[in-house]
View 1 (spheres, chains in turn red, orange):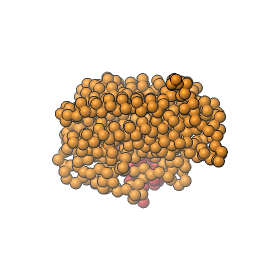
View 2 (spheres, helix red, strand yellow):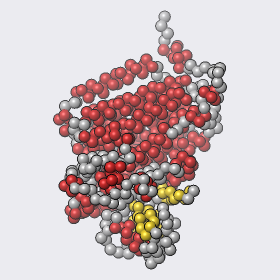
View 3 (tube, chains in turn red, purple):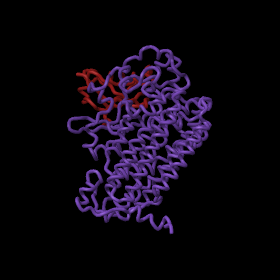
View 4 (cartoon, chains in turn cyan, brown):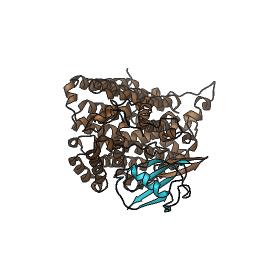
Length: 78
Length: 493
């Protein structure tokens, strides 16, 4: 099922709308967000957190991580 | 013997009467006159410092109009417009679109008080205020019309508020809340006490000072002339605030002040902060936006609060923190979404970066790398490589993009209500929403409308939905101009 989420990357300046199948993994979600930013080509580790600040398991699906329509997530780039 | 002014003025201003065929509550219904509903005895001491008569008003306004029109006639030569800084002209285009018809809505607001204000002196002052606001609409429309021969996009002076352009939707949301959907009492606090007393000095006097230094003397004269009207009818707010406080409505008054301060700040950082520091020529920048805000807005507002023994808004620390950063983040948003604007947007030159860092000591560290990346993307792939194509997350209160206060500092938050998830840029926007959910919950942001299929998802169609005809009307990079790719179809999101 496709869901829309609001993503914030630590090296960006604005929140972005991400529409994605919730069967994708948290790691894929993080990479999808930074692809819309100003430095998509930069490699390195990323950490994805939910609105409460809890780190989400990269291998979990978006649905397993508890993210659904209208949720916020943040991505910290190493 | 002719009576002296002071001998007849009170009689002429105080023409309230006791209604015989309807009661006072029917004549001034609470729903539109405002609450708490107080009998007229509570309002009969209403007064303000100007005490202008209609005769004096007409004489003064005629002189002011003659002065503005005189400058217009003297400076009407096309070459004088051509000599103005290109960025400054975009600033004027931005200002005119966002302000001109908002002033017309202000006339509707003043007329509401002219009918439903609770004392005749208040109603008299509001009648003059309505005439003021019509004047504040007509002057920019006239000057915008003059500018059409120079740049067709100046038709946005009139057009903007008839479109779904996203900046305008945000401004309209604020002005609907502040005055078109407000009763007379809330209007006096929100429009007159907070917006006009607190903020219009910035938009009209500070901007007039910059216009003088940018050699745009017609704009300077216009702004300064408008502000003399604002300063007069803004006085409506003080006696209304005093009556509220004297009659046990301190909590309500504090709420209206807090709410409108935050909402005004959000629009002013987007409109005035970016225009002052990214479109004003370097030589014209007398002070930074932060300095103008501190001296012309904050200090004066705190004095007003102290006069009424009101508290600083609870989010004051966040507001002070944002003064250093928020409009710089917003400028990046304007720049990367510039095709969705009706004016051109600048990336800062090396000299401007130096100025910005002198005035905002963390600017180079925080924003320099982001502008460097954009510059690199221009070199690497041209303009298409420098635009944002994805949708920005919009706040469900202020309707503006949920920008970071500064890179890495995110204040966005959500709220679940009646099965719908709402997004906010900050705690103050969420707090305002929570105070009056019945007022705000039904509104859909542009993104909500796209997600619901009520607005187009393809960028080219979305631009048309916003009233922007590509490529002539879309904002460009100020210095690079129309990139050849714009002549091809705009890519889809």
